[in-house]
Amino acid sequence: MVTGASAALVREAIERGDFASARELWGEYCSRLVAGGLTAEAMAEAAELVEWSRPILICARAHAAGRLPVLRAAGAYGASPPTTRGLVSASY
View 1 (cartoon, rainbow, N blue to C red):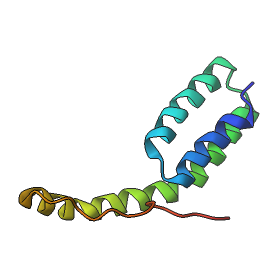
View 2: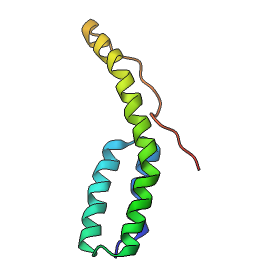
View 3: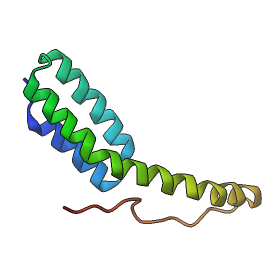
View 4: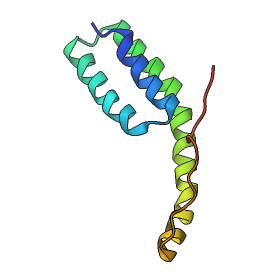
């Protein structure tokens, strides 16, 4: 059975805006889901994680897409684009 700890780690990575870690943790979490048997409880936990993370990830993707023109312009001039502190901030 999959414990809540893995879902919590994915959630924490998303909250930090560490999407590379979140993607890696999500892969591990899915592997544990399959290995532990896809019980109704495990599937409900995964569905809740997807439901919680979806709007945050959509906003983060939109923010990143909005920064693309800045990155392209900076690349044309050889300058580093301004950095932002954290892409998404969520609190519930």
